[in-house]
Amino acid sequence: MADHDLNSNSLPENQAPNADGNSASENESDVSIDSLAKQVQESLSLAKRHKFWETQPVGQFKDLGDSSLPEGPIEPASPLSEVKQEPYNLPSPYEWITCDMESTEMCTEVYNLLSNNYVEDDENMFRFNYSKEFLHWALCPPGHYKSWHIGVRVKSSKKLVAFITGVPARLRVRDSIVQMAEINFLCVHKKLRTKRLAPVMIKEVTRRVHLEDIWQAAYTAGVVLPTPISTCQYWHRSLNPKKLIDVGFSRLGARMTMSRTIKLYKLPESTVTPGFRKMELRDVPAVTRLLRNYLMQFLVAPDLDETDVEHWLLPKEDVVDSFLVECPETHKITDFCSFYTLPSSILGNANHSILKAAYSYYNVSTKTPLLQLINDALIVAKQKDYDVFNALDVMQNESFLKELKFGPGDGKLHYYLYNYRLKHVLRPSELGLVLL
Figure (tube, rainbow, N blue to C red):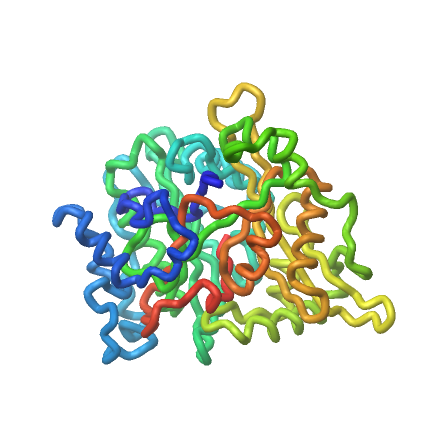
């Protein structure tokens, strides 16, 4: 199933080739990051090597496998008085703005920039189409900083032409809780891709994060940069196979007819787990306990409290869906599953304009087998007219992917930490983090 991947948060001006190419064998996650790094370094001419990233406090390819380097911050925090107080200089036609994502007008401007210029797949057939409601949810969690939502305007026309964001997060790395910024939505207008705006934007968001006395960050990209802490793969489960084939997202298998394909992916009409229901506000404490307990087994995972769970996991129409299993006898909440909604625009198709995609978020199984829990999530997504259900091979997801007829996509998602070194590259199953 050579499905098309849209890897979030691609950094548009760091056009390193994707080292995995499109012939990913299923065991490719076993390929050591060292050989991946060597491939990348060899495939880039000297001029193209990551000039910008080589100046940043991130794991460098040359240091891979050097066990003498300590785990933790690469550079110490500076006194706040030493943080640059003035914004970085932009080319003269442009100016910085702070984007107020609580404002409908601003949200619309950001939506228009992203929906026309953000991440596309390699064949330019699909482009992420984050809804305004999604953007508000993703960028306004409790304790967010408005100053971390950064735009670039053309001075003369006031047109928004670039965007980058951070939101605060607490990540647990092994036994340390680290205050971080999660960096996302780096987008430069297609016509300005040669202007080297991206590095200036990354430096500016870093400066603003430092002003809040936060010195670490997490981000993901579809390209290989120095140096991934983990490399994950997207898997896709067809819910509406006819449409996916019609729009070129997937292809009809060898010796398969359309009717056999539709039959292959058919799901039951209703969920099978007794006590399976939508999460409600009253469930927040129980879900928080379940999730905190579950995430302890991963080497890198968010440190979530009830406020976080209420914001990130309480259902919001067409943004995030969460379901749980409440034992009919004891009324104890034993299991939890969730997915978020991220449609893509279908480019240049006469019959379809939107691909409705669900992305697996956080799932916890203690009594109901994970396979059954996710199958119920697929059934709900199908009832709600999603076309495809996507999941990364992080956490315990690998245990259900093949069994539930997910197929591997053709792209990778690389996870990065800024100013924080891990001694070893993580397997996807050691990672308990999903970034939007």
